[in-house]
Length: 374
Image (tube, rainbow, N blue to C red; front, side, top):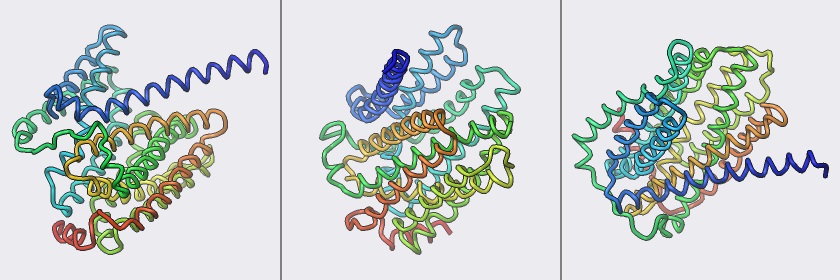
């Protein structure tokens, strides 16, 4: 091995170790957050308040150190808020039917938030200054605090017991399988977002604002499928079957993007792939989330929520790192195919999930969800 190749290998090893450290830190802390909350007396509202204050600090940052401190505090505040959110939703909606509807709405909000962020980021980049990227969070955070202060004290919470990740969670086979599906979905979803943003700007020459608007072709199908079709299709065919078909749609969207030529048209080549991907994601996310949380023992809902949040954080980081490395060495299309391959693993897990017999919402439960949404 030449000295240049050796230096390149060692540099890549250092970068990989850095990425591993970041992933481990984020996911380990996320799983520990329910225990930290219980031990130190933090609430869900503490996380929101910290995130809001940190966003303001970032927007007012006067030097690199102050910005880094603000971003670190944002991470802690966001982690405190999101790591327990699924468990709190399970507490708010103990009946399976309304809980499934709640997770469908949550899937749409997550997608809509991402699309709004893309559009807002493009607008801020073109028409405003960078501090507004952070300050835009302040009014949302204040509103969340006001609503939370009036309602959260009535929301029950399960104490953390049995360690940070109780062993009972992993004895629930459906929970681990559904969590694995979510892991592959986030790997593919973050890969899709990262690669598509590069493709739209570098290959098609779109501006940041036009790039953000282009992602509405993903968000609108997610809204239609998650809010309008996901629960109804599950009532007719079963949650596991809908999940398998949805993951296949998701993978098809990735494959369609892999074949888009660099001189292609957004409306003729990219938009159809975006629509297919969005439809698959919108159908899959509510099913996978509800199947996982309904399989978790109720006394471990908080730990289950934190574990799923950490799983998704790890999936997102791994996905972006893997496809960025592969795409840099080869082509963006290969990165899309890597994401599609991950979804094939997810389909295999979903098939196993369908064969598992314990837990999960049954047909009558989903029928109740449908009738309640009319």
